[in-house]
Image (cartoon, rainbow, N blue to C red; front, side, top):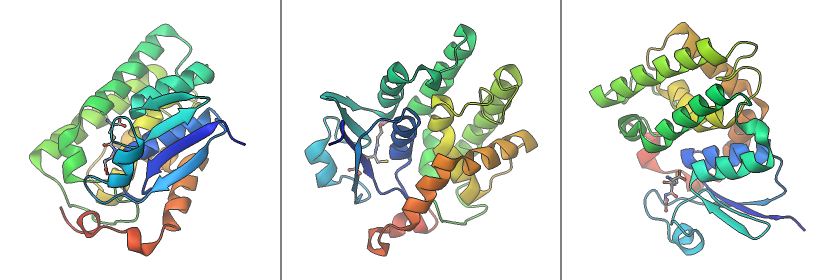
Amino acid sequence: MTDGRLYIGTRRYSSWSLRGWLPVRLAKLDVEEIVIQLAGGVTPAVRAIAPGGTVPYLEHRGNKVWESLAICEYCAELAPGLWPAEIAARAHARSIAAEMHAGFRELRMAMPMSLFRHAPGAGRTPGALADITRIDALWRDTRARFGAGGPYLFGAAFDNADAMYAPVVARFLSYRPELSAEAQAYCTSVRAHPLVSQWYDEAAKEPAAWRLAQFETAP
Ligand SMILES: N[C@@H](CCC(=O)N[C@@H](CS)C(=O)NCC(=O)O)C(=O)O
């Protein structure tokens, strides 16, 4: 008997699901994973279960939590290390996590997450490139101010801020935009994290029938 359920979408494409799954696993919540095959738009099975009509959606000990950032916050209540301990770092982590949650739409549209896609050069719209410039600067600034002692945004611990940006790393590994050396190194570190590797491994096992042409070819 588990403490509940985490509903996620097709791992190969569902960037928001990855943002919810990482904190749940980092916080070691004992929940069953239910993977819903995404239809590439509105998925009736998602609408049927999730209060907000989207995945990720967490049910834990009777608590219902939707929106990836709310799941990050919920998990941090149970595992406080998911945010930095020091108040300035924690404020910064929350700000950049919220900036990701609310923004970078051009990047998300032009370079959709598609884990095993190799398409260097695709998706370089002006808006996506502007988002990438901002993210590269944001990662460098965060690491310079708070990242000493480890490879992640706030140092040695992979936390909620890294979880929010992990799907951006996945995009960069597929579409290979030009990045600073620091941003490239950060991408390598995130991809090598055991939970990120586990996500890729489980995505590789998903049925071929779940693939969506719109995410496997040029946008
Ligand atoms: N703001 C939401 C976005 C969630 C979202 O858009 N999830 C997509 C999958 S990546 C979804 O459920 N789409 C509806 C569908 O496919 O039916 C969050 O942070 O959780």
